[in-house]
Length: 341
Ligand code: SAH
Ligand code: SF4
Image 1: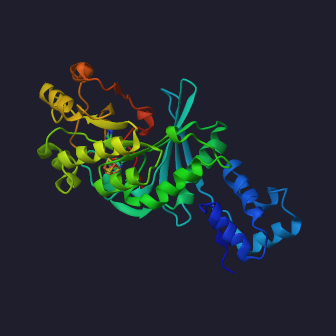
Image 2: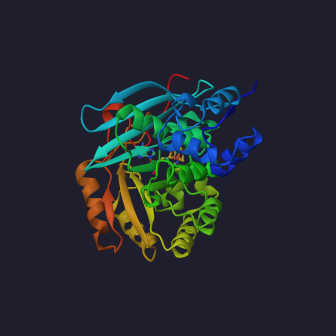
Image 3: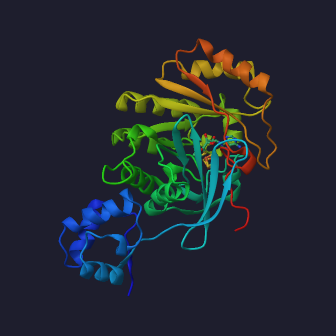
């Protein structure tokens, strides 16, 4: 018999399922709590369900699980990279970073990515497939179980373009912030996009309360189109217009991510242009020194990074430099790629 995978179902879906097997609706909430709140994946452990119901569930349903293949701990900082195997044998990575009492998990949303940014290892893999909502939230459940810690923040900045898999990502974010589940604050959940404008508008119109980050990465269309081919379809001016629409509709701040690459987008002129672009938008700027991948790009020397940062000082928006964690285990931004598929 074909067993229904319950992992990834939201409460109304679980309720319909439970009713479809002739059980009372309220059981769905109990299963929801066990599965997402407690991270339990066997019906036998659900001790507030009757023995008969557990037996019945085992016949008709299952709770899918990622399999952790390897777990690598950085020697330099508090970060761990997990390699998970999906049920179809494909693999994804997640990175857990601990700092100042915060445990941030960077989750993947796709196997590979179709956007083809020239500086990103995931982009070089191409897209294999979307992750289901269950596979996205399971990275959180597994990382907590394997590390024995409670994750406080989740960023959708691992492999994949979240807005290319919009419905599953938003569903997973709702599950992760559900009070009966992991109960993460919506403000501690960040979705990062390379700039799919229609989805930014949709995110704003739906009033989603998760945080939004946009990978800007260049200050001219010429450079951005070279680095991120999607810029030819959705150029900077339109991207900024959509960003402004989002901040005005949601009254939330947007974060612009800017990967600094030596001699490509890190000049004084770039800093000045970036100031102009960001002016008038309720935003924060996150500078990410480039992490090594197989491409032709290089990280600027520290003095150049600091020079760029200082040039932005007169902006009203806050500016931070994100020194990636775990670069000794290739766990930094843009370094996630499965080499042995
Ligand atoms: N696809 C989404 C989210 C995943 S990438 C996006 O592009 O926003 C997360 C961040 O890592 C993005 O800001 C991206 O620009 C950045 N990034 C990609 N490759 C990088 C690299 N080699 N070094 C540093 N940051 C990188
Ligand atoms: Fe995809 Fe983001 Fe990498 Fe671009 S930077 S290829 S959108 S994962």
